[in-house]
Length: 366
Image 1 (cartoon, helix red, strand yellow):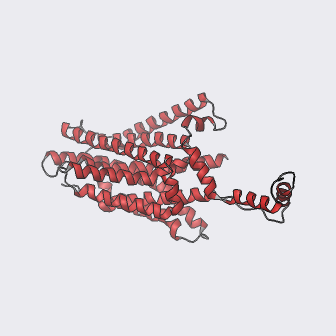
Image 2: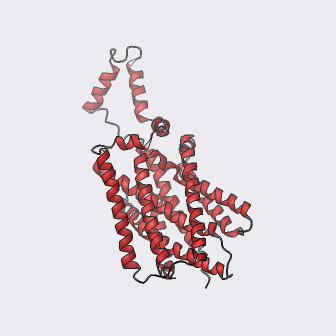
Image 3: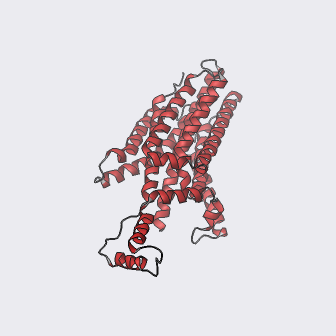
């Protein structure tokens, strides 16, 4: 039986992703601003004014002008973002990792080893508890279609990463975010949905047009992820490592499970996806006074999103195998490029949420 491609599910996934990125960009701009200016009547403000307004401290400027320049330098978020942009392109993972307090080289390798062990143990547990009844080995047709789909997945993620790094190093990300972060997120959302629909509508024989739509889709995905380049490279590296482990283990479980084991999860996953998408948009529509409601919505988007997109990965892998079998039977036309879009969106959404978890963990340590 033909398994239809649910554009509603793909749309819901990307709405959740873009809303999460729309949270990241304004949060970055807000983080560049000082928390609160000290009151003019406070002793700290008077001491700063006395120090910087004295002739010895500012021999070539009037006290008023010196105080005004000090106030401007501490109140201008654009100057802070420009400095971040200039320094961000020169930072490397080694430099950022070396600056983390309390972690020497041996401890970092130990942490990576523990992480790899947890990933392997998790994959083994999933295999034991969720795949007690395993299927036979993949047929040549299924294996060929699965390999072609994951090749498009790897190539698409490589294009996304390279384009996002290029946008960040050239300063394009900062300039677009400085104009309007919400417009920036909206353009990437609309462009991604439009190019995604083109990929599914263009026949597989028209390889030129289909690859152009595929490149456009990955370009808009890069626009969505480019603001994350302002974060520490160590966080992005760890999030990428964890995402690879999660996607790899779930894909293995989905590929070795019996046929159609997880295809019945489509309805519940779509319902959960709708809840996650709405909770991701909640901070944009709720008033600033509803702090508890916004916090609950963000937790649903974060932890619920991890669970939903993990289930979507299992569903998409089995859908890829089902499409391979139907293509071999002549029921549909094989289209590994279109099949790779769903699991690519799963990967990106899981990566974004792992980045959020690592940032929350780092903030608790401070």
